[in-house]
Length: 283
Image 1 (cartoon, rainbow, N blue to C red):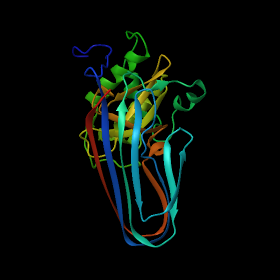
Image 2: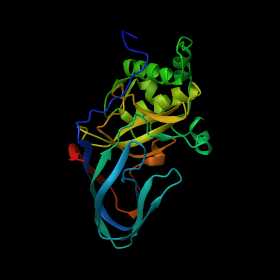
Image 3: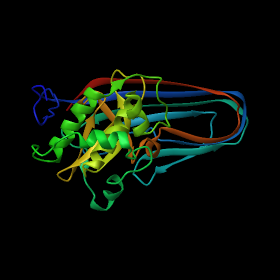
């Protein structure tokens, strides 16, 4: 492992009397070539509440102004859904808020009845011959527990897979990305999840925001000793206090920020901007 420690201890840096707060702003703008007659949309861009983070407040807007409802999907991800029935050539969603980062090294305690769906291959995280051979090439017999397996696989994937944008797309599977040998955070997450499930470790895909990205980011949570721990294989690290979790699922499709169904519209151009910055709040 090149001098790496078999386990990583995450420590959040906190000054006495202050807590870390992340301010975020997300904007999505879609322009259509032709008028859209009708559009149904679902947006999952509201930070979750868990052991690691707490939403202090937020505000959002949707243009054109539409009637909407708020709720949760089957994974507990917060969502906004609605319908626009008037012709329009532009759709804009904006949200901004503040998230307090709490002092813990795990996301949440595992609920036994919700673990099973994250144990088995699914969607874009299906095992193929390439990933199967790659997994079999590793020997984990010297590792003490599942957490050490997670760290070892993260290190190796980061070393054996290259980051490059424009090579894959939102439909690319873990096996397809692995064959290409290159991809983005979504591909790292799908491959890592596939490998963890092959190792018998329940794992789930996470969509969120991170300081310095300028776009959404993807990472993975793995079940270790009854708790969900968060790993970022793209950056080869545990999730720290510069991450905001929006949602999780079996693969990227379960927690996609924006999904919609529209009539007409022709070619569309989507522009997304993201800002995350750290602040301190006195307590």
